[in-house]
Length: 182
Image (cartoon, rainbow, N blue to C red; front, side, top):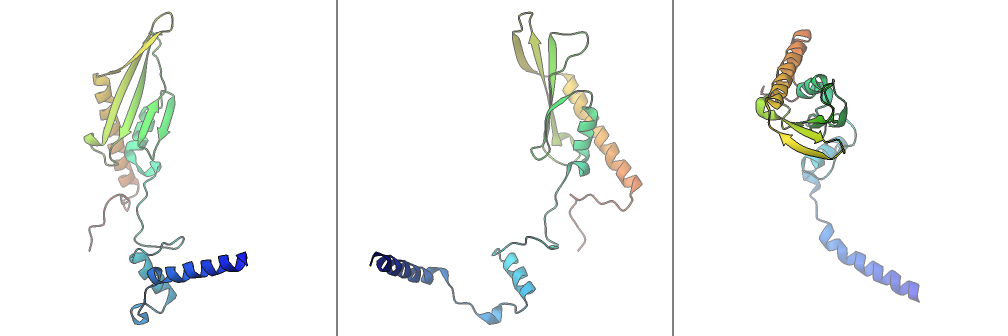
Protein backbone atom coordinates (compact mmCIF):
# COMPACT_ATOMS: atom_id res chain seq x y z
CA UNK A 1 0.00 0.00 0.00
CA UNK A 2 2.85 2.36 0.92
CA UNK A 3 4.64 1.66 -2.38
CA UNK A 4 1.49 2.42 -4.32
CA UNK A 5 1.02 5.71 -2.48
CA UNK A 6 4.66 6.79 -3.04
CA UNK A 7 4.48 5.76 -6.71
CA UNK A 8 1.30 7.79 -7.22
CA UNK A 9 2.83 10.80 -5.50
CA UNK A 10 5.91 10.65 -7.74
CA UNK A 11 3.73 10.42 -10.86
CA UNK A 12 1.70 13.46 -9.77
CA UNK A 13 4.85 15.50 -9.11
CA UNK A 14 6.39 14.55 -12.44
CA UNK A 15 3.19 15.26 -14.34
CA UNK A 16 2.98 18.72 -12.76
CA UNK A 17 6.57 19.52 -13.65
CA UNK A 18 6.08 18.91 -17.34
CA UNK A 19 4.18 22.12 -17.94
CA UNK A 20 7.11 24.39 -16.99
CA UNK A 21 9.91 22.47 -18.66
CA UNK A 22 8.56 21.49 -22.03
CA UNK A 23 7.88 24.10 -24.67
CA UNK A 24 6.09 23.63 -27.94
CA UNK A 25 8.58 23.63 -30.79
CA UNK A 26 7.89 24.38 -34.42
CA UNK A 27 9.88 21.75 -36.29
CA UNK A 28 9.91 23.94 -39.42
CA UNK A 29 12.28 26.37 -37.61
CA UNK A 30 14.79 23.69 -36.63
CA UNK A 31 17.30 22.17 -39.07
CA UNK A 32 16.70 18.56 -40.09
CA UNK A 33 20.40 17.67 -40.32
CA UNK A 34 21.79 16.54 -36.95
CA UNK A 35 25.06 18.48 -37.30
CA UNK A 36 23.24 21.68 -38.28
CA UNK A 37 20.86 21.27 -35.36
CA UNK A 38 23.76 20.74 -32.95
CA UNK A 39 25.55 23.82 -34.33
CA UNK A 40 22.36 25.90 -33.92
CA UNK A 41 21.98 24.72 -30.32
CA UNK A 42 25.58 25.69 -29.58
CA UNK A 43 25.07 29.13 -31.13
CA UNK A 44 21.88 29.58 -29.08
CA UNK A 45 23.77 28.66 -25.91
CA UNK A 46 21.88 25.41 -25.42
CA UNK A 47 24.78 23.01 -25.72
CA UNK A 48 28.50 22.51 -26.01
CA UNK A 49 30.93 20.59 -28.17
CA UNK A 50 33.28 18.07 -26.59
CA UNK A 51 35.28 17.22 -29.67
CA UNK A 52 35.46 18.46 -33.18
CA UNK A 53 36.78 21.44 -35.04
CA UNK A 54 34.92 24.59 -34.04
CA UNK A 55 36.17 27.70 -35.79
CA UNK A 56 34.90 30.03 -33.06
CA UNK A 57 36.92 28.54 -30.23
CA UNK A 58 39.00 30.77 -27.98
CA UNK A 59 42.72 31.30 -28.32
CA UNK A 60 44.74 29.62 -25.61
CA UNK A 61 48.12 31.09 -24.81
CA UNK A 62 50.81 28.77 -23.59
CA UNK A 63 54.10 29.69 -21.99
CA UNK A 64 56.02 28.81 -25.13
CA UNK A 65 54.05 31.34 -27.18
CA UNK A 66 54.30 34.19 -24.66
CA UNK A 67 57.47 36.19 -25.22
CA UNK A 68 57.22 38.08 -21.89
CA UNK A 69 57.01 34.82 -19.97
CA UNK A 70 59.91 33.24 -21.82
CA UNK A 71 62.07 36.34 -21.39
CA UNK A 72 61.39 36.44 -17.64
CA UNK A 73 62.27 32.78 -17.18
CA UNK A 74 65.50 33.21 -19.17
CA UNK A 75 66.53 36.33 -17.23
CA UNK A 76 65.79 34.81 -13.82
CA UNK A 77 67.61 31.55 -14.48
CA UNK A 78 70.46 32.62 -12.17
CA UNK A 79 68.28 32.10 -9.09
CA UNK A 80 66.11 29.25 -7.83
CA UNK A 81 62.40 29.78 -8.43
CA UNK A 82 59.94 29.06 -5.64
CA UNK A 83 56.64 29.62 -7.48
CA UNK A 84 56.01 29.68 -11.20
CA UNK A 85 52.37 29.87 -12.22
CA UNK A 86 51.67 30.66 -15.85
CA UNK A 87 47.89 30.62 -15.51
CA UNK A 88 48.13 32.97 -12.52
CA UNK A 89 50.69 35.15 -14.29
CA UNK A 90 53.34 35.19 -11.57
CA UNK A 91 56.95 34.17 -11.06
CA UNK A 92 58.46 34.26 -7.57
CA UNK A 93 62.11 33.50 -6.92
CA UNK A 94 63.38 31.90 -3.77
CA UNK A 95 65.40 34.00 -1.31
CA UNK A 96 68.96 34.29 -2.56
CA UNK A 97 72.10 36.10 -1.43
CA UNK A 98 75.21 37.39 -3.04
CA UNK A 99 78.57 35.98 -2.03
CA UNK A 100 79.68 38.99 0.02
CA UNK A 101 76.51 39.52 2.11
CA UNK A 102 75.48 36.48 4.11
CA UNK A 103 72.89 38.26 6.28
CA UNK A 104 70.96 39.93 3.42
CA UNK A 105 68.74 38.12 0.91
CA UNK A 106 66.42 39.28 -1.80
CA UNK A 107 63.37 37.81 -3.51
CA UNK A 108 62.02 38.92 -6.89
CA UNK A 109 58.36 38.75 -7.87
CA UNK A 110 57.29 39.23 -11.48
CA UNK A 111 53.58 39.73 -12.18
CA UNK A 112 52.16 39.68 -15.68
CA UNK A 113 49.30 42.10 -16.21
CA UNK A 114 49.13 41.58 -19.97
CA UNK A 115 50.48 39.20 -22.61
CA UNK A 116 51.54 42.12 -24.76
CA UNK A 117 55.08 43.44 -24.73
CA UNK A 118 54.53 46.81 -23.06
CA UNK A 119 55.78 48.58 -19.98
CA UNK A 120 52.48 48.49 -18.10
CA UNK A 121 52.05 44.77 -18.83
CA UNK A 122 54.56 43.65 -16.19
CA UNK A 123 55.29 44.52 -12.57
CA UNK A 124 58.55 43.62 -10.85
CA UNK A 125 58.73 43.78 -7.06
CA UNK A 126 61.81 43.17 -4.93
CA UNK A 127 61.79 42.17 -1.27
CA UNK A 128 64.80 42.34 1.01
CA UNK A 129 65.34 40.20 4.10
CA UNK A 130 67.95 41.16 6.68
CA UNK A 131 68.82 38.69 9.44
CA UNK A 132 70.94 39.30 12.53
CA UNK A 133 73.31 36.83 14.19
CA UNK A 134 70.45 35.28 16.23
CA UNK A 135 68.48 34.62 13.02
CA UNK A 136 65.88 37.30 13.68
CA UNK A 137 64.89 38.54 10.27
CA UNK A 138 63.01 41.54 8.97
CA UNK A 139 61.49 41.61 5.52
CA UNK A 140 60.45 44.65 3.56
CA UNK A 141 59.57 45.64 0.04
CA UNK A 142 62.25 47.85 -1.44
CA UNK A 143 61.96 50.47 -4.12
CA UNK A 144 65.17 50.49 -6.07
CA UNK A 145 66.35 50.92 -9.61
CA UNK A 146 66.99 47.16 -9.74
CA UNK A 147 63.29 46.40 -10.25
CA UNK A 148 63.13 48.89 -13.14
CA UNK A 149 66.31 47.44 -14.64
CA UNK A 150 64.89 43.90 -14.47
CA UNK A 151 61.62 45.09 -16.02
CA UNK A 152 63.47 46.82 -18.84
CA UNK A 153 65.67 43.76 -19.42
CA UNK A 154 62.56 41.53 -19.64
CA UNK A 155 60.91 43.88 -22.12
CA UNK A 156 64.04 44.05 -24.30
CA UNK A 157 64.49 40.27 -24.22
CA UNK A 158 60.80 39.70 -25.07
CA UNK A 159 61.05 42.08 -28.04
CA UNK A 160 64.17 40.23 -29.21
CA UNK A 161 62.42 36.86 -28.93
CA UNK A 162 59.41 38.09 -30.88
CA UNK A 163 61.61 39.62 -33.58
CA UNK A 164 63.64 36.41 -33.94
CA UNK A 165 60.42 34.40 -34.37
CA UNK A 166 59.32 36.71 -37.16
CA UNK A 167 62.68 36.34 -38.89
CA UNK A 168 62.84 32.53 -38.63
CA UNK A 169 59.22 32.05 -39.71
CA UNK A 170 57.91 34.91 -41.86
CA UNK A 171 54.45 33.34 -41.95
CA UNK A 172 54.28 33.41 -38.12
CA UNK A 173 51.17 35.16 -36.84
CA UNK A 174 50.73 36.02 -33.20
CA UNK A 175 47.90 33.80 -31.91
CA UNK A 176 46.70 36.65 -29.67
CA UNK A 177 46.32 39.06 -32.60
CA UNK A 178 42.75 39.57 -33.69
CA UNK A 179 41.88 38.83 -37.28
CA UNK A 180 41.14 42.19 -38.90
CA UNK A 181 40.49 40.80 -42.39
CA UNK A 182 36.82 40.71 -43.34
